[in-house]
Length: 225
Ligand code: CA
Image 1 (cartoon, rainbow, N blue to C red):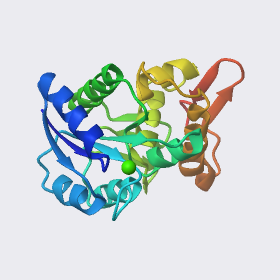
Image 2: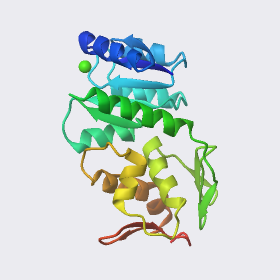
Image 3: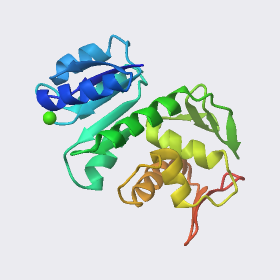
């Protein structure tokens, strides 16, 4: 497995590189945003670890540029910022996960393995709930004939819900499935994503398919709402 770490704190980057090599990963380093983007664009990496505050081009912009290229390489954002808003922001531009600095090396390795595992999963489907459908293989979501663009994280939340359409899905299940078991942040990141999804799959179509079941979780109505 070959990883790219884009991090301008050179000593931190080199320490992580040594540790990850000891875990069996090949790790290349880049220390600026533009160098990181150029390296990531070679397509040689199984995952990218991306600092946010970088010289030249921020991690947000590097990630956005990769997604705009149609590159779905798993991206783990490394954030020194506090607060869910920034993190949700990072995920909304297409990052797959984030880790707040300072992080423990053991947690970093676990997150990387979880990312690689998710990326390598054979996905079943396609799924549907009424006229809403999601095709995991094609990474495509449609309502009727209209295609809906979702970020990677929104897609993962919807995939989990639509695979269980009609069932009440506890928030904690969503957190564990989509953010993985090591997520240490606030459970209301799920609410943030449910809000994003409603604005894309329901509101423009005057639907209410994605229901909140008070005190229990969320349900994607099987009849499409
Ligand atoms: Ca930095």
